Amino acid sequence: MLIALMLVVTVTYGQKKGEKTLLKTEVMAARLGLDDKQKAALDKQLKEAAAERKAQAEKLRALREEMMRDAFVAQQAREANLKEILTDQQWAEYEKLKAERKKQGNRGKALGRQFGRSGGAEGHGRQQGRPGMKLRMKKKFENEDKEGNDDEDK
Image (tube, rainbow, N blue to C red; front, side, top):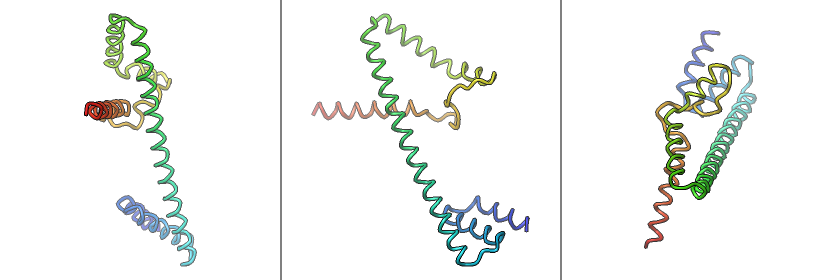
């Protein structure tokens, strides 16, 4: 029985989403001795739960993207205000400091984690070599600005 369960679980990883719920239903039916009516009800419930999880994940993904966009727009506004306050020389120095800070990357955050302090959510779950949300949003807004300027010129 254990070997059969392990085989079913192993096969589950290669299955499509709809087939996974059916496979889960079959495993539970075998372990619990469910009849056909119970199996049908369980399969329906598992599919509904999977659909709910998928919808919730999409909702959270959209919310996260909206929050990142809003944070990016707010950051751009803060920098525009700061640029109005600073002289050209001070702005150049600010940009230089910002570039140095970016060049250092997450070294300070990594050191903080080494001593048990959290460095925030940055880097968690993100693959190395992939552009971060901030960079993607910046590129997106730059492209939209270019497109908007092109329309105004016409």
